[in-house]
Structures are given as C-alpha cells and as structure tokens.
Length: 225
Image: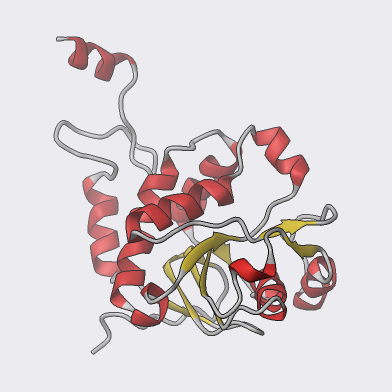
C-alpha cells in the first residue's frame, strides 16, 4: 500500500524522455528501451593524445534532455543508469576494460558549488564500481574555463589548454592504463588535454568512455556486422 501511494505521489519517470513509467517499467519507458536496443550502443571516439575511446549513444533528443537534467536539475541518481550502459560498452571492448584505474574529466569549482555535487566524479566512480576497477581522482582544473557550448574547435582547444593539472602523485599513474570518463564527448578538446597531462605524468595509455557523443561525425561501431 505504501509503495503504491508513493508511486502515485511521486511517479517514477523515464531517465531519457521523462515520461511517467507504467507499472512494471524500470528506468526506461517502452519506447526509449526499444530505441536503445535498436541503437546497438557503441560509437568510436578519436582525439589528440587519446588511445581511442567509445560513447554509448548520440547526444540528441531525449539523451540530451536527460543529461541536462543530470547536470542542471539535480538528477544525481542518473549516474548509476549511465554507468550501467557505459560499463556494457567497456566490457565489449578489451582496450577499454583492460585498464588499471578509472578517472574522470575534472570540472569547474564554480559548477560543483552551484550544483552541490560533481557530476563527472559521480559518473566516474559509478563506472569504476560497475567494472570492478579502482577509481582515482587524477586531474583538477587550475582555473575556471568558459562553457564549451557554441565554441568552435580552435576556441575549445584554447579554452582548455593549460587549465588542467595533475591532482595525484605521478607514481600513482606511472606506467598505468587509464580509462577516463565523462558525460559527453564533442570535439575531444577537453579529453585530449586531460590525456596529454596524464601521459606527461607517465600514464602508458589513456582511453575515453562517455555516455554520449555530440557532432555530425558520429560513427557507430558495434552491431554493424
């Protein structure tokens, strides 16, 4: 009775399209679940200093809206859902799963204060837990960077260049294979700068895993046989 009352007062909603879920549905509505199954997750990522990477889904429609709620409307619990799908992609690709540790792209301090949480950290820790890998905070912003949205590729690179420092001792990542996570991959400017810093500190390999990939050059690589 109590569970039904709570469901009436606070009906669970689809993580993606945010519609009210029907009885028996979990996380996703039937329509979004069908779309995800057809999507056959896995999109290749390329960027400077990166040793490859993958994203689960294109950053469009309900995926974009979901990430917006996660980052700007306090939907912290979405991290577990995203991590589940990201871990599935990592498990399908040995070059991602065969890592020594998981880390996250660093965020601006002002964004963390405004949100009350670090969305990138939550996601990275959730992915590490799913994969059974240790999580280590390896990077930090040394200055505030402007929002990347609307910036051209060259402007994105200039915005992030030199803004990332190592936040752990070099000994902790020397010779290590690092899997770096984030919510969205666009041009690779941020991921590339982070990978550069990690490799300068001694990391042997840096791969990237994100929930979504933005841009017209999205190329699906899983399920195309």
